[in-house]
Image 1: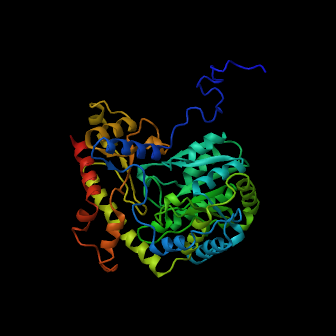
Image 2: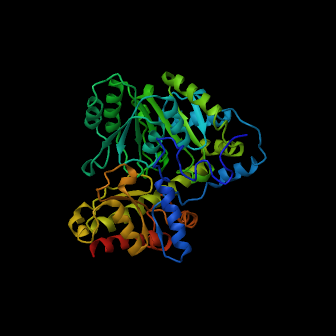
Image 3: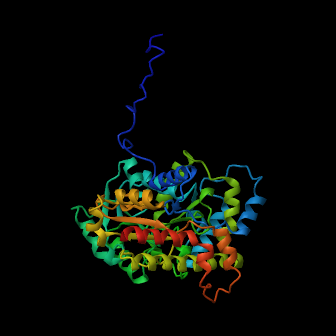
Amino acid sequence: MVGPPAETPVNSGKPISLDLNVRGLGLSATLAIDARCRELRAADRSIYDFGLGQSPFPVPAPVVEALRQAAAEKDYLPVRGLPALREAIATYYEEHERLDAHPQRVLVGPGSKELMFLLQVVHYGEMLIPTPCWVSYMPQAQILGRRISRIHTRFEEEWKLTAAALVRSIEAVNDETRPRLIVLNYPANPTGCSYTGEELGELAEIARRYQTIVLSDEIYGPLHHDGGHVSIARYYPEGTIISSGLSKWCGAGGWRLGTFVFPPQLEWLIDALANVASETYTSVCAPIQHAAVTAFRGGEQIERYLAHVRRILKTLGRRCHEVLTDAGLRIPVPDGAFYLFLDFAPFQDRLARRGIRDGATLCQGLLEDTGVAILPGAAFGRPRSELTARLAYVDFDGERALAASEKFPLCEALPADFFERHCGRVLEGAQKVAEWVAT
């Protein structure tokens, strides 16, 4: 038998057989900052962890109890998902968004992240991605070799995509019949901003005109601070795929359960996704799916949970916004979720004198000087030279804050000292950013 000497590794430790699309691909920015914060805390550094963006709140008690009761469930489930869960999800969208949702057009996956990746596997087309955007949209497209068109948005428009910008992006390529898929995320990660019904209607009109499929990432929809989330599927039902899951509004990121809801016109697409899913992950963890039925069916206890979570996030977000804008940063007021997108452009000259000329250097300096961990705008698709960053205001004990909030009627504002007592690290971290940029 002929072969290389036993002592000589075939690749000598070099990634010579890596696919070209993954060469140079690093760890997801949110996971990388989480690992860095753990390292620094292990070294006894005081760290304000505003990087990862994980919900600080506990999973609602009825959902936890449902998981406990389903712990013995061990069978493979249908690749599209547990029938009772798909029915609960379809009913949710019928009641909350007045959509023609059907259980057969619901797909359950191991996190919406995986479903988004599979969608790009089966849909061969150009990806239109407004920036700033969630960190994994573009790396997923890169892995698959998909064409990406970034549509850079502006602070003056609250970092939101406009109908005019969408038209310009589509018409910049002289092929109006090219298959396209545009990703919308609202309330948005990383800005916390959302769209009005009028804005969604205008975007829907353009998507329909150019026969563009919309992947509407509404994972933060139930965390709209005023409970006013509206899906673009109301305006463009025939061409919208709604993406959601349990990670954000239900505080169950580690459970890894995501959902896609398709319209009748895109049944060919869900069929293709289900076929690929059957050859990859097979089905989602059985106990998690059984518990998720309770989550999507909702009820008074879960609605009260959401109302308290929204009240905390809305007020805390505005408190942080006030501290940071008073210091001179440019930040739109968040409509939902738990993010602020900081623009340090007013301090460009001052930062340059300190050797800071891009977002990555800015975030590194901030972390070293103050212990505040945030992510640069480049991680969210913005130009590397741009002095922007995302702050996730979640470094507090959500279970403790939620229990304290439940002592006060929802019809009233929380006491003035509530956030100093229960979210003090967030306010302290925001103040450190304000002081750092001013020195």
